[in-house]
Length: 394
Ligand SMILES: Cc1ncc(COP(=O)(O)O)c(C=O)c1O
Image (cartoon, rainbow, N blue to C red; front, side, top):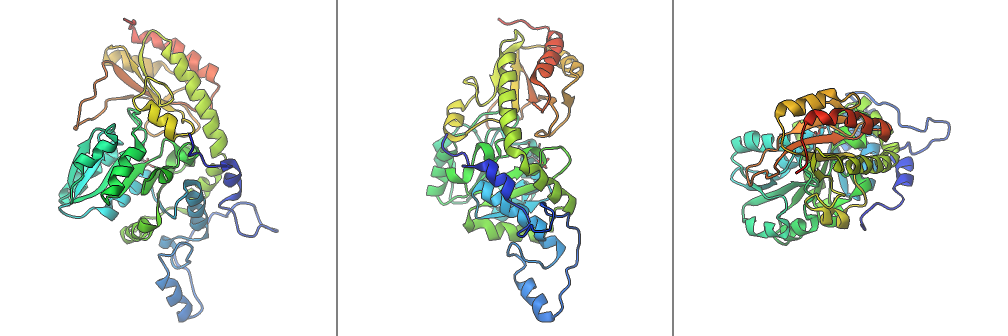
């Protein structure tokens, strides 16, 4: 577990703040606006020519002082040479992909990726003439055998946010780098508190800030963090498409970041406590939590991550869909909804979509997002609803 960011709590307090705070508020203000005005044409032209350089004040769509501070904060956390914000996590994924794909190219995508990544690949990229190939997320260095001269990128997620397999990140990145193929990793689950993928050879990290990074279910945003080689191309793609973050969201993301470490530490403890308790219940067949030996890729997690987040899956012994519905509906402290990483607990039945392989677990998969409620409250809620699954261990 050698890749945790040192002194990350200190960084989170100091980073992304106004350069001078004497007589000013400690936070960046909410910054709204479109046109930025200049007194001379020469000053305008200088700004226009430097518009892709982070921190340049030119026009609202290219960023402002607050977006610049947030991008710098995220770059420090990820150990990235460049970060560009996007309007959502999905926009981060799609715009990172748009930077690398071209008609006729071959794209390798892990079979366990977030559903919308798959949708984008199968619709927009397919229409553009990109050949998308899904691969076994646990392939590791074996990815070398799938790389072609036309492969434009390898896309994966650590862990899969629906099924939680933890891939061998250095295995994949080592093989891809040796072949000169860039890797794009969705690291939303871990956050830089628990994994810094650029240090494991990943070229481009994408994440949804709508989840843990902002952390309060009140903000939608994404980011693309990369090594220097790709930073400007990514930024130009985002700007060319015209994707843009709102001023209020930037403020909320900066505010959420301040508490990221304490939230992640709590959620790690709470998530493991509840997963361990669930593991002992007769209805549970398998725990899909990266910190548990029963999760595929657990050894990769132990090697490459410094902690876990509060999102995990449980495979329940085979039962009917109606029983799962009754169980989920009976929970009072777990709301039903997509997304995760906010302060509130959530629950969602998951039907994994696979095309490179098959989802082989025999049973019903339910995903839990642990929030900031008392763990005793959550366990009592689960204990009351579990009998509705009406299953028994073998
Ligand atoms: C792993 C992962 N990446 C990206 C996203 C998309 O993020 P957003 O909802 O901010 O577009 C999600 C959303 O659920 C996700 O689970």
